[in-house]
Length: 380
Ligand SMILES: NC(=O)c1ccc[n+]([C@@H]2O[C@H](COP(=O)([O-])OP(=O)(O)OC[C@H]3O[C@@H](n4cnc5c(N)ncnc54)[C@H](OP(=O)(O)O)[C@@H]3O)[C@@H](O)[C@H]2O)c1
Image (tube, rainbow, N blue to C red; front, side, top):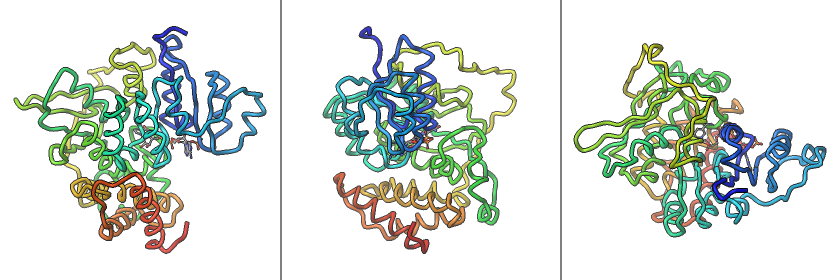
């Protein structure tokens, strides 16, 4: 294997980000080599991936029968050990929720390149992860399309004045609160422009996803919350923008396709031509619109901005409350608007810790989740 081949671990390889990462790797066999794959319960797909990419290190939560049936030869390692393994150059952090938090930290401590999709790790522990990365010369490469766009706009620039995150507005843009009260999980799982995992799809429908992205952007680009704004752009062609002191604005555009920001994180600072990506046809670009977000119908966005302003452990509490509330909504135990109500209640009660340790954050995470279940009158 040549030195130029990047050796990759994909955490969450069976998910939306993981599968799209493997599509990029498949397109460039001379550039990338999969060393480790990690999944949760979908071990049938994981077995196929291990077989195809000859991954020598594996982690999974579920049943190992599918891997045994294929007679695969692999070494089983915990997520955190994979993330800091000496044979790996780039760790793709593509698990959902707080599952990947410790692994992302482990990669930061080991000085890895981290292609970070898992926004919850950055929102919950942004201060700790960025400090560890700085201390150990780890590089955090954004995968989320909005942060990738800003990162691309910032190349060759210094001192941005303002970051403008775009949002599709989700499937319920324009709905009134009374209409939103009746929204079902099935309706919320249909996103108009992106195909994603269930948690992020619901977060996109409530606009919590945009709120989490604002907090992530503060850490990624060292920007105060009040210099980050959101604009609704339903076509999802502009992925975000950066404004500079002279009023100039740079934007990054492409058809919505997560493989592009994933590939950019893996090939950075190079760009590679990928025949699977569609180039924009400007003759098709009839509607190109922008609107203000509706903070009243989508209170999650306001809650996230407020949590970021408060700092301390508010963002971690926000994440924990959101994950618990979204879980309840997906099980049809609460309504769509109850998600924001429960998060608000959890944040109103929250006693924040300043400069929290990882243990503080993990303890708050458990406590807030339990409290959300209690407030919803359920224990699961
Ligand atoms: N999808 C997108 O377009 C997108 C865009 C930007 C950012 N993100 C962020 O990227 C992250 C992943 O999103 P996604 O849409 O790819 O989610 P997803 O489709 O739900 O995938 C989650 C992945 O995590 C794995 N996983 C779950 N529990 C695990 C455990 N205990 N140990 C190891 N792996 C576990 C799942 O495995 P199994 O399926 O095998 O159980 C799956 O591979 C999220 O934080 C999301 O906010 C996603």
